[in-house]
Image (cartoon, rainbow, N blue to C red; front, top):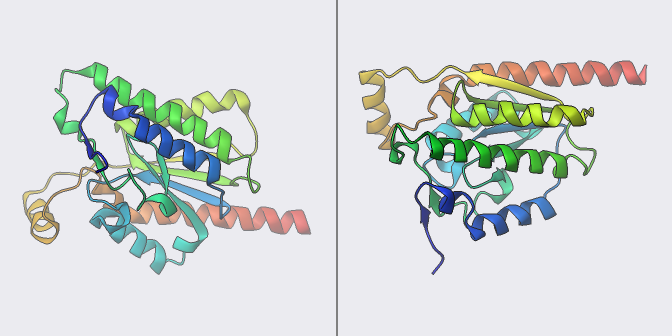
Length: 225
């Protein structure tokens, strides 16, 4: 039976199963749209069935944007495009920051380093295919470990400046704990996801995507004039 990879630390960041799964994505994945939207993973699996992604995807669909972007998750185990979310091990792992001792900065550093290295590898590999993406939006909680890792990753990529490395980091306000709201989340979904701010601030993501797509349309119009 495949191992359920639940835990924190180096073993759960660099497990051979994750390495193999990431290599499969790097070997086979191709961009489908001009814009990539990078978003967090989620406690519930597959990701799209979690309430934070179900709600965000519903909002994107209503705005006519869901089919205009490549929807890609950034997780402790790797960078996971939507098309791969139901494959092992992406439905059979759990990394929970609450399991880390608050004073254990080493493990948080290892997490940020793993995300940083994998994101850089993913971008450098995938953007060479199918013309890459014209823009890449990264929507994460401000000051979250993933946002800090991606800030470092985009800095890593700047020395290799190329039009295909065109990022926008959308820093989402952290969820403000509210007893009544949190009770409602628990009643409806059974838990409060750490990244509930993802769909609480879906308007920020939608506005950023609409602005990006409009800029690309203008650029294409000018280029064809």
